[in-house]
Length: 236
Ligand SMILES: *[C@@H]1O[C@H](CO)[C@@H](O)[C@H](O)[C@H]1NC(C)=O
Ligand SMILES: *[C@@H]1O[C@H](CO)[C@@H](O)[C@H](O)[C@H]1NC(C)=O
Ligand SMILES: *[C@@H]1O[C@H](CO)[C@@H](O)[C@H](O)[C@H]1NC(C)=O
Ligand SMILES: [Cu+2]
Image 1 (cartoon, rainbow, N blue to C red):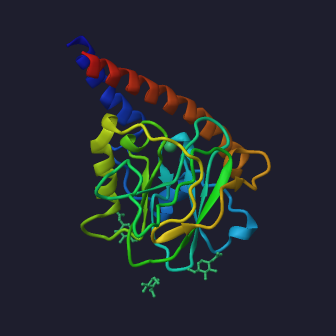
Image 2: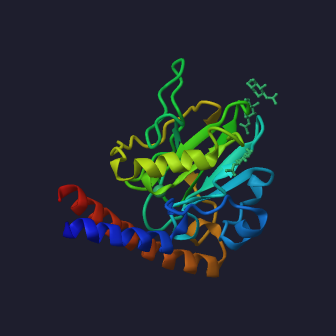
């Protein structure tokens, strides 16, 4: 009873500290609010690509999390080089927080758990929605998911994120086998490579890096408290 109350007390705290954790999901990024997030400066070679920041601002989110990309478009993910590792792992709308099953011998893409790298997908079929998530323990259940070419009705990005948050603490512990090439609808063009940003976490500006690092500490502490509370709840 006590631990249940303790866990429930933490839920609103979590939602307040990080609204995008899913209990009160943040709206999809727009051009105005994505400017507020510290999006890494894309290296010159990625001009014309779709760029997605992993763990934007130290929060367990992809930013932007829902993008459109036509055939042949490169989608590059920038991982922070401090704090926890994260992944870009292809998922399945029907089974959130688990890797998509192979189709016709083709497995989903998986960056593997990474820090300080960039990872690029090449869209090969823009007619199918591509769902992905972070396999780091607890992150998917906290809403760290994204989509490429998700529809505007039905299996939308919002529905995908809500399904992941519903999995919540029952998220399976996933083995990390490192980088897995291939993919369904988008393929990894190469293993993740060191981020071209010289000094900092994800190549963002100095002030952005600093605030990102600070809020990462807060997020990690909250996530840890959240995990402890859930563990107490489950063992009660
Ligand atoms: C992306 O894939 C298409 C084929 O699906 C290929 O023609 C194109 O060269 C690829 N782009 C890169 C940069 O690898
Ligand atoms: C993109 O490629 C897929 C697979 O070849 C194809 O089915 C689809 O029609 C292409 N999309 C467009 C807009 O041509
Ligand atoms: C996600 O992006 C697609 C375009 O790829 C758009 O149609 C859809 O409305 C967006 N969904 C959300 C929840 O923003
Ligand atoms: Cu993560």
